[in-house]
Length: 340
Image 1 (cartoon, rainbow, N blue to C red):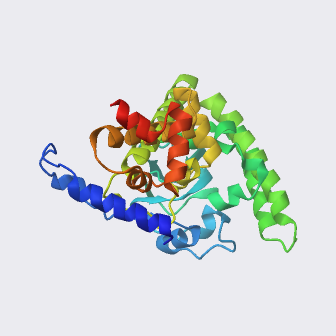
Image 2: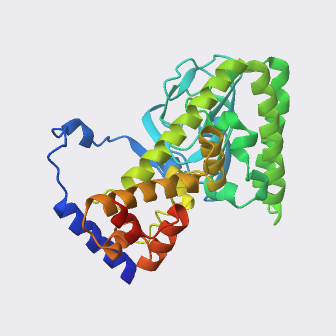
């Protein structure tokens, strides 16, 4: 840990020990309930858990449901994973559940999974169709997916809506999956260049079918709900990360939107776009406003030195803190304290 980090830890400890906790509500044991729900960080980990072989590539995979039948766990209890999945069930019985949505269509069904959603399934081993899985590292490796959730918002719906397509719409979707899989299994050195283009084709085809088959108001309401939930989670993270007893990574940069985007498993640009669309402020504005509020409270209500406050608020140095404070208030920290 660097010198600034050690000083920040010392300042936080001093602040924590001197804090008055008399106003806090009685402790609720329900708050510390730890779920035993499985959480899969990688595609490989997920494949092992459901009983199928690991993928050829750590950040991408495509398979037919047929090749999994007889191997895959037929009844999977609720779990989470950290990647995207797009699937087409051409035929088969049973259902896959995302979030609270248990209305899984019986016919030809397109369905999605997004990072951190609660998923489960109970299927009969007679499914046909395809699914592909994309890690966030895979998406970040290509400029084609820079605005993935803006261009294809159905992927960010917290309670993704599976939808049924008509018989005549099925062949085109299946053909795209077949092309992706054929390229994936090839020895071509440039195969992922083609796979990226085919995935874009698939996403656009799914978007066309989604817009046609899903009620626009229902979709719009759920997308708006997803954005509001993301904003709420971001604001809560910003607030709790500055708590005196917060458990942080050694090199956590609490002043950077990228840090919170990483915790939320989204691209920083998407986080900023959602925050700005709802609040009119950037993600960095939200962070700076919170830091400024904490700084003013410390200056007005405690006897902590500017140096201690600087490290308490995770600045690299007191000079950086003073420059930040003056830039945002037009006066120095000491001048602000004297004015109170």
